[in-house]
Length: 274
Image 1: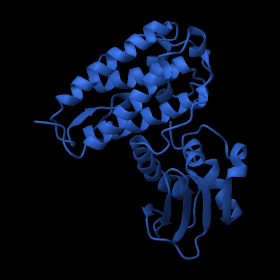
Image 2: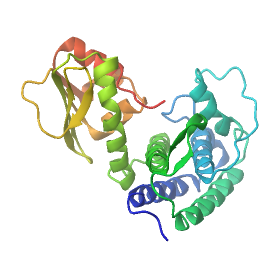
Image 3: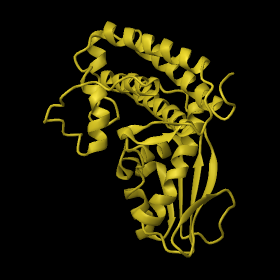
């Protein structure tokens, strides 16, 4: 038995991103691990700790028994507390400890993927202990590791891999989350359409349609007379959707047309990651 074909793209995306992360952090000296990243509240060490923790979760390792400090300003809800546990437990690890654990975790994860024969619909442990399918777990994992590769690249001034396999997974994950933003958070009018025109390394034109019941769906067909159109480059799309920048900070890279109130509401709620 081997990895199910449905899961292979996610395994390939993870492999590409985790190899890039290893290459980025291997030569860092101790002080560089404390460099700030675009991920709120996290240094390079914290991002790598999170990536290690994500893979430990995929491996089914027990979660660390650890008490979080009370003064972590970026931790404001239960989901963030859950995530922060894997990060804070490694906050005082040295550079060699970080790279060694990263390498060892990757070896274990590669072995797991080589032996993975489960069906994509198999239920596995997800965030906060909820059950999700193996396919969803691997898709979200590939997405998260690519996003954190980009966080590290931004912190180190080494851009790249904006069109890698992980980028394509990220495109699909982020687009799937946007109908909720348009329909419920931005209160787009029923029977309306919002167009997203994204250019750059990953290009796409998508229409978010809101039906008469107020439900949103993603379509590839263009819309005539949309209520709003948002045009931006791929990197800006990712940074906005992942909460790495505010709309005001990238206003020079955004073009909006249509209902001003609606475009403003969409951009204020554009971040879809926890």
